[in-house]
Image (cartoon, rainbow, N blue to C red):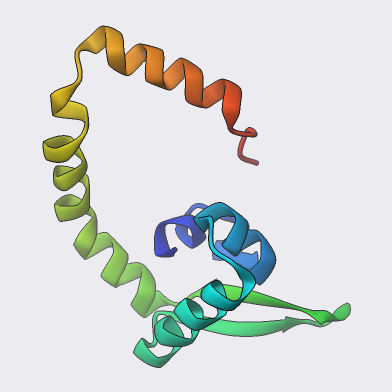
Length: 105
C-alpha cells in the first residue's frame, strides 16, 4: 500500500481506490490503513469538498520507511519471480499485464 501511495498524485488516494489497487475489500483496506496510521506511515484525511470521501495519505515517515524497504522488496521480487523467467517470458508477461491493467495516471 505504501508503494501505491508513493506513486499516487500528491501521495494520496481515496480509500476505495487504494483498496482497488491493492485488491482488498473495503473492510480489509480500512484495517490495513488503521495499522499504517498507528505506525505513523499513513494519515487519514477527509476530502473538504465531499465529506463522504476519506483519503489515505503517505506521511514523510511512511515514505522514508518505504524507501528503506524498497531494495529488500525489489530483490525479493527478482529472486522469487523475475529471475525464474526468461527474457521472452518476461516480455510476454509485460505485454499481457499492459492489456489487462488500466493505465496509471
